[in-house]
Image (tube, rainbow, N blue to C red; front, top):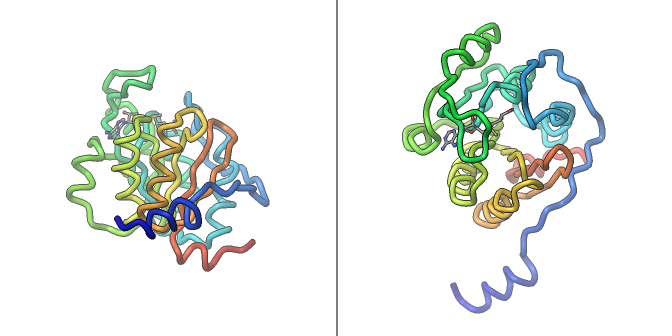
Length: 207
Ligand SMILES: C[S@@+](CC[C@H](N)C(=O)[O-])C[C@H]1O[C@@H](n2cnc3c(N)ncnc32)[C@H](O)[C@@H]1O
């Protein structure tokens, strides 16, 4: 990297979080009664989709656990793809394999398809484009950056949970914004939600 680029990125082009301030709160019709730290965020999903005119065809989620956020997305997209090891991680309470139970519980939502896979294998084989993506896996820098960089390059808008409770997640989101040139917002409530939006979404934004 040359010196003028370093100076430009350090002092002038440094990406930083803008505060996300929803203009409306909407309770989705379909909600799942399971334990989740995601509760509360369902109220701002429609606002984000409207704000940046995000398409409603397909959504991919990495980090389903018991399906709370997955069911929230099923209110807004024709197809929701959920990817998880379903075996938990160093930050989750549950570390038992619950794929079959979760699949059975979510089978009433016909537009949700669950896959038992880690994101590492998934992103290796998937070259699709998604309207929207959600990253809520193990809250470490490396994994969030790697998975989120892929979703940023394969979707118009990616959201990340736990930007306030895990500084590594917040840093990874900022670094993905820097790497991709996407715009970045943070909603500080409910443990924090990072929002990355591509150029098309920013051009279409309402406010
Ligand atoms: C915080 S939970 C997801 C919570 C969920 N979004 C909700 O609404 O309650 C994190 C999930 O990420 C999954 N996970 C962790 N590392 C993963 C990886 N490398 N690939 C796929 N899933 C992973 C865990 O199995 C766990 O179910």
